[in-house]
Image (cartoon, rainbow, N blue to C red):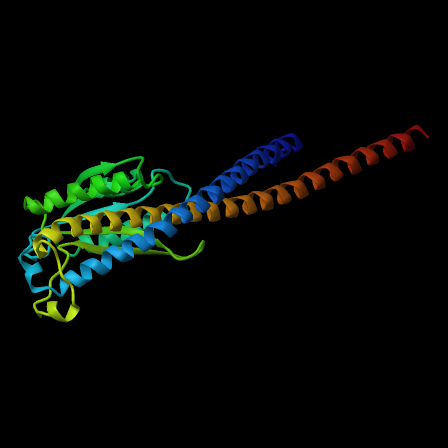
Length: 282
């Protein structure tokens, strides 16, 4: 049975850990507010870009563009957005497992991992990691999204991949995060010609418009996905730290009760020894 000195040392150690967890909780809460502010900007941008692309899907001429025209799928790229650091619950594993279920469907994978945790997960399982982007998931800059989108587009246009997906965790609330795998390339096509009914006029022509619209859509989608994942990461870390603080408080409470009982027992024993000595002297 541990001594009183050992129990007291353990209480002090757990209390120190509790203070660290409380500090990390406050940091995560502050970062979550910033991430949600960025997300409130990224979502309308992505929705507007998606509406433009959806309108192009109803244009027959769009099927002639390489980014719209589907082809036989041999290699699939997965842009997987995870965190660089842990202590955020199942934020990374839930998304990685969902992507893994897609990969195991039988298509040759090409993984682009944003975040070291995703890189480690797929590396341990022997998957084909084409590129890794550290220090991107938390900052979520538009320049990074544009750089990654350009790289994906080049892989598609050169024929190294035949379709591309972006996998991220969608932020619903501080407690609700939904892993999603969204198809990004090819953008899609529609054989039915409804161009005149849409009332849209593309200048100078549809294909030239697509050259600018689709990259903008890809940038917006990746940028929004980065911000969604960043908000989910900070929310998950905040919840994990709150749970750790509660657990530490419970451990301290139990250890304190044990310490008090041991101390009371020691005092009672000392009193008994004193009384016994006094009786012997009489």
